[in-house]
Each structure stands twice: as structure tokens, then as C-alpha cells.
Image (tube, rainbow, N blue to C red; front, side):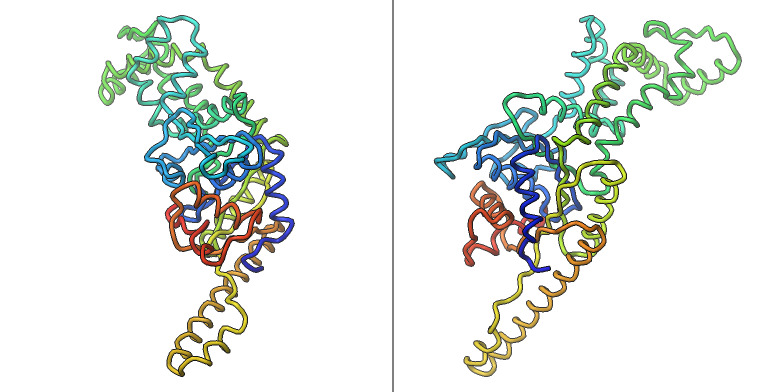
Length: 390
């Protein structure tokens, strides 16, 4: 396997950009995942699609790749015409705002204005909506469902956190809904909370003990906030659960596809295999692998050309040539193992040196990845895989 893409890997990815409604880009940290997501979005926009790239990773890597200081929870349209005056589509970008997304759900499923205000002002809710395990990923699913139905976009590309947590946005709703539906505190304390008011007249000795322990460790004010939250949430639970089921169905449909980004390093490849296995187990549609930072084979005849220079310099250049050859062959073997382990083709992108920090850099990434235009040799080492922190 060379740094060049197998024809079917490139074809599958190009077809997904043309046909899919949702692409989820996942992978290990530091393999160029965010840059890959942004470059795919740019390529799709230049070929006529209206694309939104949304990151659920709280780090600001997507904004950096786009040459922006920051992104917010609202889609921001990018000016493509300075890069390509004849651009046929549109490109937007945003970063998930967990709090605002949760608030919007509460507003949607709470008909009574007073009840809505109580929930939004509830201290326990303010904590749960941002800090409870699974809330961030649940809101990512919720936002994805909203964006899929937004008429401004016909392709949404979702950039996810590193691999070990990349599928949390699928499993998190079950965890969060389980907490909200079966929380021990809810079932133990609910009989002693009425309309958000705590009654200390407990009917049983067990209940009195439970309430006493809760008061000792949590405080009655916290328990009252907790009570108000659960009582108010009961009317919204079915709506939350129904939307979670809709996202599950959407992500398993033909409209969606998953792209796994890796590099030739052992850890990144192990995580790519793990991610692929999880996708298969979950029945999620896989599009292909993108392997960044693949060392290309050095040009043939390099050693002979070096021999025509003075002897000492020729020896040094010959050593560099052989080192490059060893790295390239190592990467070829690594990607061949990934293909053998998964049975899937791998699209290799050459190693680059400089970070991607604007649309022009992303265009070079897309060209190197999808082959829409050749990447000049002088620029090749400045493109996709260079975003080492991405």
C-alpha cells in the first residue's frame, strides 16, 4: 500500500460526498481528523453541495483549520468565492453548544411557560445540562437531528472527539435517559417531594433513613432542586426518548456514513480497527478509512543522483534517501495490515509539514485526498496530515 489511494477507497469517499446527507468523521486524537472533516466539507461545497461542518469536540481545532478565531453554536457561513469564484455550493461551520441545545429541548417539550422557567432556572438542571455524563453527546445527537432537517444544508459533516469516545453520542442517550428514568435518588426520594416541596413527614423508617442520609450528604436545598427537576422532567421524558430513537434510525440509514481517520502509527491503527469493529457491531454504515501522514516512497534514482555529488554529501543524502524508503515501507506494511484486519480499502494521504490554518490549505488537503487536482511537489508536504494536533 503506497501513500496513494486505492481507486475504490477514493471512489467510495467521493460518492459519499455526493450522495450522503450525514458523514460522521471519527478517529484517534492527533491524526488529522478535524482537518479531514473540514477538507471533505470544502470539497463537497466546491462541487455544488450546501455543507455544514459541525464539531462536537469542545477544543477549537475546527476554527483553527478554517482560519477563524472561534466558532459558536450557530452555523457560520464561510466565504468560498475568494478561494474559488465559481464555487457551486456553500460551506458553513459551527461548534456544538450543549447548554443552548438542552435549553431548546426543554422549551420544545414544556408547554407551560411557568414550568419551563422553573426548569431553566433550576440549579440541578443547570448542572445536569452541561456536566452529567452523556449530556454533551446526547445534545450532539439532538443537534444532528435538527441540522438534518435544516433546509439550508444538504450535507452535514460531524467531527467527533477521539476514538475511544467517538461512539458515545450513540450510547450516551441511553445512559442519560436511564439516569433520568431510573435514578436511585428519584425513586427513593420522589414519594417525599410534592410539586417541588420537600415534606419531612416520612411514612416509613426506611424512607426516613434515606431522607436523613440524603439531607446529611446533599442538603435539603439540593434535594428540593433535584425534586423540582425530576417532577418537571416527567412530562418531557417521552419526547426526549422519541427523538433519541429517531437519531438512532437516522445514523443507521443509507443517508448516513462513517469515515474513520487514522495514521500509520500502531496506536492509531489499533483504534481504527476498534472503531471499525464497533461500527459493524452497531450496524452503522461504514464509508472508508483515511490514513494521514503516510510517508511517500522517495523518487527512484535518488541514490544515483547523490553519487554524482561530492562523496561526503552523497553519503549523507544517501542515508536520508534510505531512511525515507524505510519509513515509506513501514507505512505501506501498516496500512496493508489495516486493510487485511478489516477487509476495507484505505485511502492514504502523504505526510505534510505545516499546519492547515485556512481554506486554501484545506483545498490542498482535499486535492491530495480525493485527487480532483494534482498537488504540486513544492506544496505536498504542507497539506493534510500536517495538522498533527488535530
